[in-house]
Length: 257
Ligand code: MF3
Ligand code: CO
Ligand code: CO
Image 1 (cartoon, rainbow, N blue to C red):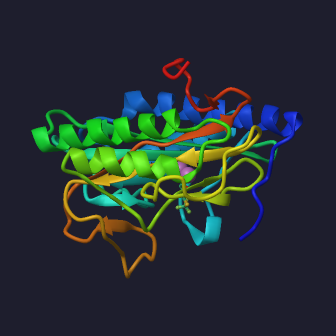
Image 2: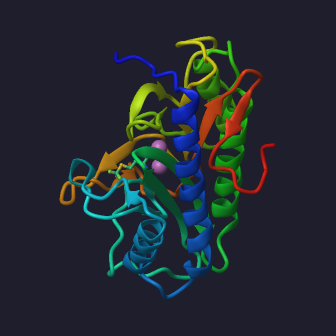
């Protein structure tokens, strides 16, 4: 395994700026997320906003990914490719995932959106996924084991009749898109490395209504769906481990402070 990079104060300043821009992009796109628009339109607005702010959308051409953002609709777990053929309709739920590169530094965040009136099951799932991220953030402080993030998330999801995707993880971030460590959203208590001041990583639990397993789209090689085509939801933040706890770098609203 590659080493976990402890970020310098200068790197943290750079990452913080990129994280804020990613969060601002997610806020900017919210007003366009409505019934009747297609996801490629949203992607193009996102790309324009990021470039207008002097940054680059990290997904574009990342291992051949063809678009500037990931938009994952309903049973899509993650890495959905925005498309003009994908038109939002009443009852849909979707995740928009934004990663920016600003002056070489990365910020990564995502959230769910609901179109019109969604089912009670969908609304339950979104609430559980949001709570899972909050629980992971609560576990993020120096000396705690990284595994306790996944341990607590797994417990909460199961207690609320949901399952946790284990095939995709959170990750160190900042100098590159995906760095060590892997942040599993399901783990043994007190497993893995200990958190240390200066670590920067994402927590991004993908929570399913049905089975935890996923399948990869054979044609596009990217879209990840639930194995049973039941709904999936995800929220993501980039956070910095501080001396006392953590700072959520992609939290614009002071929700966690
Ligand atoms: N933003 C995703 C994450 O949270 C990764 C997307 S990789 C891409 O890690 F290639 F699909 F863009
Ligand atoms: Co992301
Ligand atoms: Co991420």
